[in-house]
Image (cartoon, rainbow, N blue to C red; front, side, top):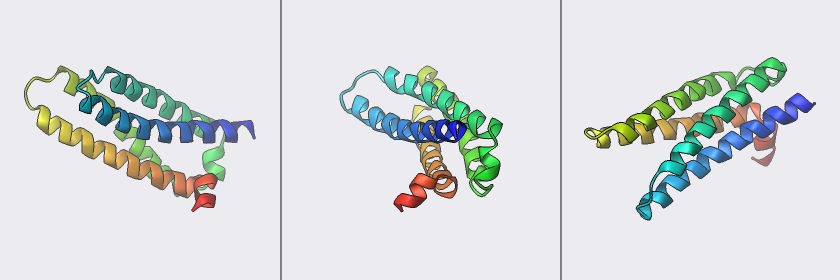
Amino acid sequence: MIGFLASSASGYLALFSVFATVALAYVLRQRRATLRPHELFGYAILFVVLAHAMLAMTSGISLRGGSAGLAPASVALLLVVLQVSLGQSLTAARAGRATLRRFHFATMAAIVGLSLLHAYLNGALLRALL
């Protein structure tokens, strides 16, 4: 039971952190402030997503919860790693930033969509609310 609660809490923490990080990027850009907090949230999301995956896999929750949501979750995990790499590239890039930003945005949209699909397919709370 504790494994289930920890896995659920870390999963929803990751999901809400993604939404907060996206909103933070727009607020910081509008104020022409540094995007450093957005970058730090990106690293935190990667940590929480990895912790969530480890909790779900090691406690056997992923087997009991059904395998339908594992595919979108796995792809989303890989995209989070790619997203952090894109963010690092954006920080260092001088040329080609517009293309990198579009790819960063598209990757974010895919992460959000796949994460919501995973939460719907494997998360009891989201299914109960919908």
